[in-house]
Length: 116
Image (cartoon, rainbow, N blue to C red):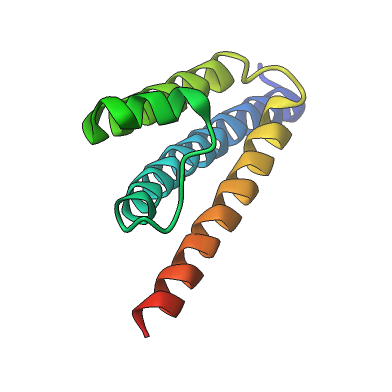
């Protein structure tokens, strides 16, 4: 017979995995928003890409930039998912969502300021 503590631990593990899936999906989507916004700023000659690898991909072709950025973001999310049992994975993933969320808010605020 199952005890309540075993059921609670299994439920907690399922809930934690589901929450991490949502956090990683959010992180991936925020990366996509950042990629499109960065490309918009660069095409408008209002910004430059600071990351040398991404700058190289951007100079090659804008699609290479988007594919490269999304590939790296996807691989990063996959790595975080594979390390989901590590105690710092959830905290680190959530921290990245906060950072990329702030970057996307910055993009949104700047788009709003320039569109007025």
